[in-house]
Image (cartoon, rainbow, N blue to C red):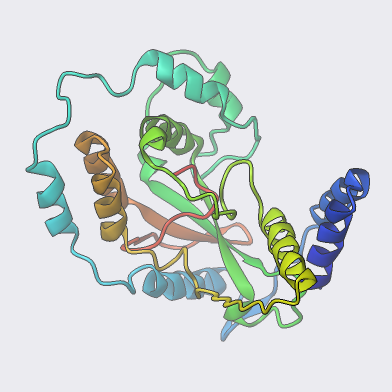
Length: 281
């Protein structure tokens, strides 16, 4: 199903039929809401299922060995890049706020983006800024709704978190370059565009009767098993201000997840590895 959809999209784009292309893109995103299963694994009922997911993901998000204390020592005991320069200003916050989506959904605190935009200039940061609501969502076109492997975790952070991340991202994005050959999770690009380019390259070499060798690697749970310590090391090599790196390190250290299932919330658990899918950073 997924491969046929991608082929249809690339065919429309390759024939320059842009109207058909965007219609297919829109139709692929208009799937109706999926019903929640009454049984997942060995658990039944919202409370037991939520706690089952909590136990499952607490293992997933603590499966990569790292040393946060060593990371803290490396970044906090090095000289700041520019100790006088103010990193986040009222103007930069206002700019980030203008780019915040007007979604009516909120995180654990229930505060929407519009609450922040139109709630006044003086705000109080909620305790839930470091807590993320994790909602297991069934993967497309699956039949066995009771299998844990047929779900993917969708994180819902509070909007104050998204605003803060936008401010940080605006500071580090000029120093973090991205390869032209990267298409996924990159602004102004898409995986469909990647397939189109790959298909064009293959067809070009086929015209000259040349061999084409390709290797495809699918990293299992790539987002969930990212080593946070190595991410900080990579950012440090780019010359990012160490105050920002220290902030990110502290953020990673105190962030906690809790599962939501059919209106029930599990107990929160720490996150030792992995990054939030869909997050600004």
